[in-house]
Length: 309
Image (cartoon, rainbow, N blue to C red):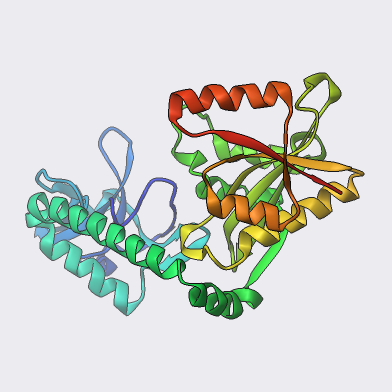
């Protein structure tokens, strides 16, 4: 049912009378193989005194499937994505659903074109936003507008899904149940490391990991910051600065005397952020050796910065 329903979405299904199903509704039905499928109703018709439906996925290029009324178990009335719920039983989404049903015979041509247009549009918007974010006025304006709506905290298990999506863990095929693994880690931050997150309403829009390594991991022992990331829509608003500040406070509460991190030497924004927070370059023999090898392979060199607390 892409793009209307995507992998990872949660759906709410309501039991209904078959007579209440309309063209454009998303039906929840069973097949002869006892599989359960969610597809859109594109036509209703009577046969042998019974109501039947032609049902098809929005992005399916093949012919629709004929489904008997008794096989329809219900219809989808809500979709939850990124912890936000969209109701499908409103007038607006009924119109949208009917539109998808009408264009279904032409999906073979419409969806490939639509995908390209969407990709180009997102790319263009990204370029425009990047240019705007380079303006000092942009950062000052949006930092003021968004300040009251952004909250910083140590992540809890409830943040696992949103945090996993921010870092695209849920899209990595080599990780099995990454959100569940992350949820377990967030239950014991003293053992697995602290995730410091920035939240805007119900979504995690930025994060950084603060971890402590034992003396046996010398020369990597002590407290380190990893994985600073801010959703591209919210950059230049001081979020990285606040995440760094809170991470240092958490380290200090845990009796840390120093926090270290790796950063690319040629990354001016990141270096400015950390040096503004009081980090300075330090030289540690073995950690410095690996960045030199990375530089030869990737043409980028990492350096170690540290801040005394």
